[in-house]
Length: 100
Image (cartoon, rainbow, N blue to C red; front, side, top):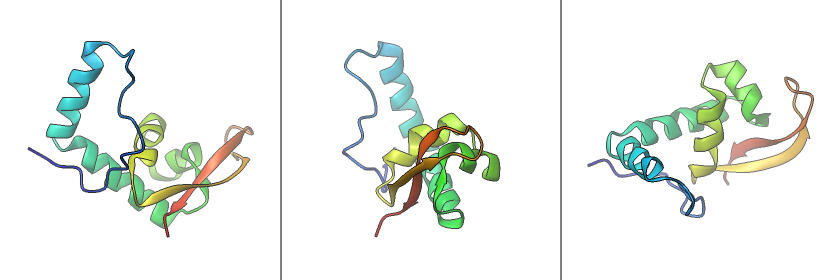
């Protein structure tokens, strides 16, 4: 069994209204180690590119934007930065940086 060593417990993994398939998928992605691998990829992306939005990080790193959207908040090593206009979407978006 794989244990998440970098998980932020304040971030819920699923909602009470999610179907059973979501809970099963959560169990699979955690036990297979995929969640931890994705979290580490996100941490590395932010380490190398602090102050970028998830969409900008996706373009810079090739990591799927939705994977970033799910995993960035799950990492205890990362925190939300300031909000600014994303250079890709031209919409206001939160940036990501390393947690102090």
